[in-house]
Length: 357
Ligand SMILES: *Cc1c(COP(=O)(O)O)cnc(C)c1O
Image (cartoon, rainbow, N blue to C red; front, side, top):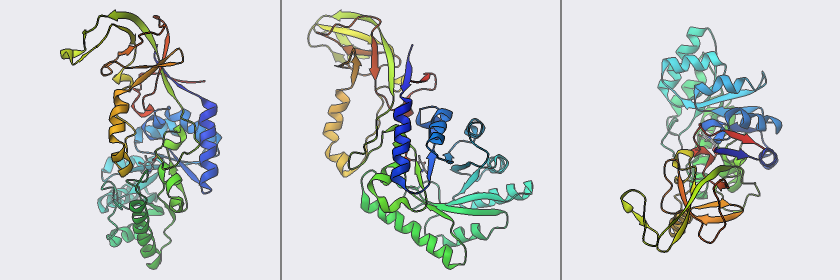
């Protein structure tokens, strides 16, 4: 049976390393099923590392997350929403809302008023992502949040669009956030907790740490940075060789015979494919560095590998939905052998059990 295997000690080590490097409070981003490591397991690993602030995108995650947190732990909902029902649910949940537009501020304000509550929130500034957030020149919209009776703005943040590579772009985004903070303070408000850094920024742009860093991928050890991080790459997909057969030279492979084997080939059938997240494109930064290594990236894609019995074998053709053909010619691979695959954990379907060892 397929399973995604996670080394708990290695994960804990990554959490400790991130906390030590940050030097400011760490907010653990546990979206997308805790980066594929399981929402509650990832949250608990962060708790063991002393983290008390968490961030999610989906309201469905609030209840299971709350069940493993302490009473006073903070949960930030990073989705800014102008939907009345979502705003009401955030107010009821006791989470910290994100307000990224005037409509979202209005929805949250009305939800708080209806509940007879004051809604805790952080203001989001869009400094170049094009997603949630007030544009940096909409200072008036930001100030309206701070002035709103039913909102308590406790922080202000932005999200970097290219912190894995382009330091100049990241620094300009940081400056835009700081400009908004200065305008808030000049208007007589306290801006609150200022935050911007995600995992790559923590490593690549140290001045972006501000008052708090929001970290997700670094916990898994899968973060794109300019220099090696020292983190451990955690997690692998374990599948099984379900059968082995010999294909004569020239045999077609796959739908439409898109590929062919050039020589007589021993083929192992491995019980996992794109449905388990294997063979899907990931971790490809569209940076200068990325552009330079595009050829290398394409080569890497061609060289998709599966490890069986400690030896790496090339994948034949493309991974199928739930099956991958592996060229094990010259190896001693039998049905029943365990295979290790390295998909991004984010892509590993929720049907695959996560197993901590
Ligand atoms: C996903 C996310 C993060 C965490 O990013 P990593 O690079 O995985 O650390 C931080 N902030 C926001 C707004 C996010 O959506």
